[in-house]
Image 1: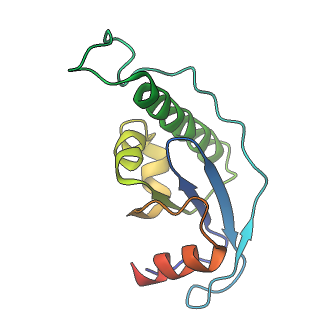
Image 2: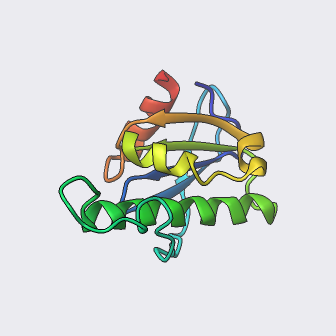
Image 3: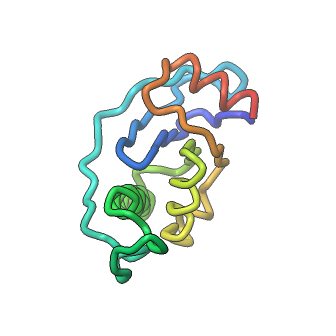
Length: 134
C-alpha cells in the first residue's frame, strides 16, 4: 500500500494509540511520530449494556472496546476539524472491528487504508514495512 504524503497513520490496540505523519513520498515513506492523544474511555456503547457473565465481555474487554470507541471519536474529530485529510489505520484485528463501528462518514471518505495487525510498541521501521507490504 502506498502511504500518501502528509497522511496520518494511527497505530492502535485496546490500550494505546500512536500517531505518525508521512513526511516522505508515497513510494518512500518517512514516518514522524506525532504527539500523543488524550483518549476518552467513557464510551461503553459496544458492550457496556451487558451484565458480567461468562457469555458477556469481561471488564478488561469492555475497557479495550471503550478505548477503541474513544480512539474513533478522537480520529473523527480530527477529520471533521480538518486536521487529517488522509488516514491509514493499523490496529489489532479485534480493535479494528470495534473502531469500524464508530467511524464517521467523513472519516470513511478520507480513509486510505486499514491493516488488521497489532504493531503498537513496534519500531517505526516495522510499521513502515507493514504498511508498504500491505
